[in-house]
Length: 302
Image (cartoon, rainbow, N blue to C red; front, side, top):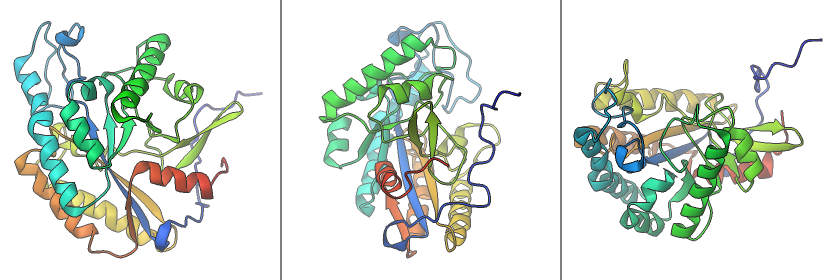
């Protein structure tokens, strides 16, 4: 007898659940702001090399020493980008979920104070903003606990959401064994939340997005202008909103302080906010709100 295949290629298939979002919304829209600046690879953080990922220096090479240009590109996110994005969301009075890297949050308590004041959801984005693929399970577990405790100490309560990003094959097991998380977002496999079962335990998964994401400004075959970003988000929204007439859907939008926070990019986000707020039956919410709704109304593993 063949062993059961470890991946789920079926999902909901032709029978998606009958989702009933609040106020009969056709789509749940959720914005994530990744706060990573100060938690990236750096010799100042005890790493062997400088950061090479998601900066204006596409194809950057690792340096055995301080990479001053790379450092300053990340610093822009905390010094300027966050505040520009924060001002925009406060203007529109819209909810926001922060994927916060523990080390990064710890280095900027002024921003943490503003996040708390703005009532943003603080989900954990790990202790470090590094690739955990080849990090030992014991170290990853240690980092997970450190991130949880850091957020609890700064914000007064532990995070109920988890997203490593560059996760490992051990990440979900560690999330489930740690417990206390309403959801994990280390998945991109659906347009709706779903349950992942491990042994006799289950974990709610709320898929994230790497395409509805400003990171594509800084990747090959990505967005070259704000208009491209806006049009891509608009097309995604229009498709899901149309489908949502029969089967309501979810849309996640990923943002980064050092990326969308640039003057030449923020207008595309503003245009998108103007666009979606002109529609009826749109639920713009925090990620934990989606989790609570799903746990209450769709508590069955498919």
